[in-house]
Length: 286
Image (cartoon, rainbow, N blue to C red; front, side):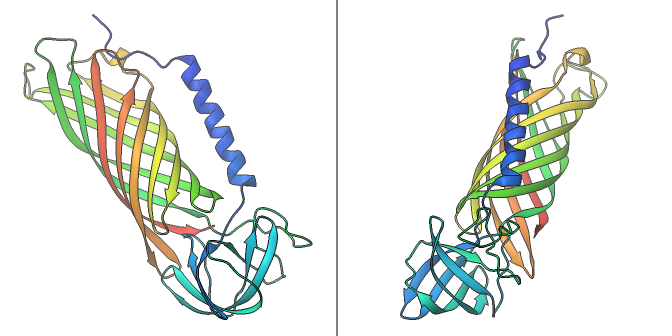
């Protein structure tokens, strides 16, 4: 019987491993940023706070240009993802990066600045996501083609690292179900395909404050599989690419991310497969 799903090519596995290794390196060594300057009115500075960073009245914040401190002040008010700072010294400019000083006088940054000690813990999130998915599969190697669809669930854990004021790398571990069926052709309840995957995923996220968009790459390994229309021996590991969009709702010291994803399976022969996901979770700074 003709194979519908080919095993992954070794080169794709190698690319995934390199991507994950790069991601881990960025998680460890990438710079963290607290936010940026939005407006300067005399001695009053309005700042945006990036997701994952926590500011409170009394915090000392520096504005930076490259690795040089340009000004500093004291936070007087925080509301949502914005903060007000009274300027103590210097000349801040709109769009300059802001960095928070910790209790030991260190600047919260992934790079040293002058004699400041590296802290490197702010501006990043970790959390869990539960998702509802709408799955579809089209078998094109028969005429007419057979379309199957269904719904399932997914749960994932993620950690991210800010590598640029608006760019984050998010690494995820996940458990995903893919369940589709159709009443066409097959007897005994129709045609069915059911696969449970363990997976790893890397997502490059561009944030606009609390909203964000992203592009992801995913590796899925089947833990269990069943089908009465596809040979289960041909259902193997899979790659997907994904388009992401969402919003991080601020709640107390954490965030509730609402996340929409479209993913498409790569490297399949004779079939097309894709998923739409709507996820909701909880995230906290790390």
